[in-house]
Structure formats: structure tokens, C-alpha cells
Length: 42
Image 1 (tube, rainbow, N blue to C red):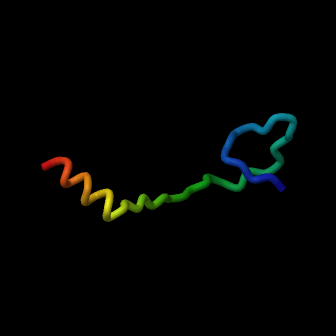
Image 2 (image 1 turned 180 degrees about the horizontal axis):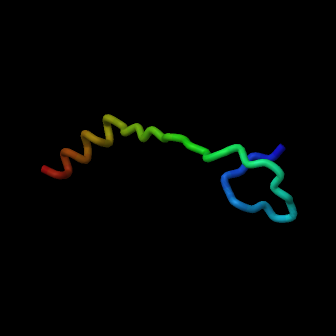
């Protein structure tokens, strides 16, 4: 079984479509880099 988010795969036949793939990402910021950026803006 191959799982993909593209519409085609070279040299393969698509036999089943499960549905729309969904997800989310979280971007964490560093406290130290935020503090230094604020100092530079002063």
C-alpha cells in the first residue's frame, strides 16, 4: 500500500481514493531569538 498526496504516481495505477488529506503545523519561536529581535528594533 502506498500513501501519497499527489494525483499521480509514475508507473502505478490508482485503485482506491480514501479522501482529502488534512493536517496542521505548529511553529514554535525561541524566546531568546524573540528577545534579541526586539532589542534590534529599539
